[in-house]
Figure: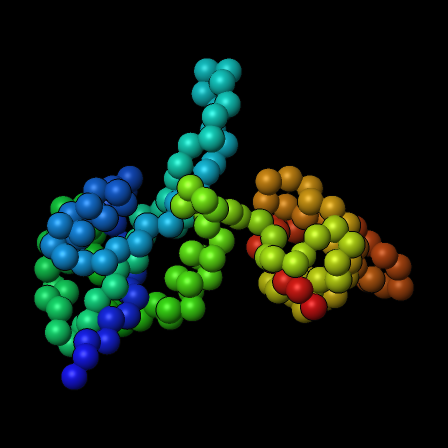
Length: 169
């Protein structure tokens, strides 16, 4: 019988994601800490700094029936393994696969629009007050915001929403 390894979420101590990742790897666990580049300004200087995509969280792959997963709770840098009842909560493989598909050549997750969406594309709003509304992507309005033309009350209205809140029609 082969081991079935699935992804699970680990809640880390503040700013200790990398430390937890290293210590879990030392114990033989497969880990994944998605990172992205964030623009930071300090002392009149702007630079791109690597940051965790999900602050205080990382993913660990394990077989909950065979692996000694309770040891994760006492790992330096870890607050706790996210549980559903008394067993580790499952993170679908598709979630991790989708995040990895958005990585660039340096391993940083590119935030923004899904593949195939560009200005002029028909889009659907996926969440927020305009959820399920359909419109046209007018422009990218910033690092993580877009302008979408929606047909509301019989006329086109420009709304600015997070880029993560739109999907292809």
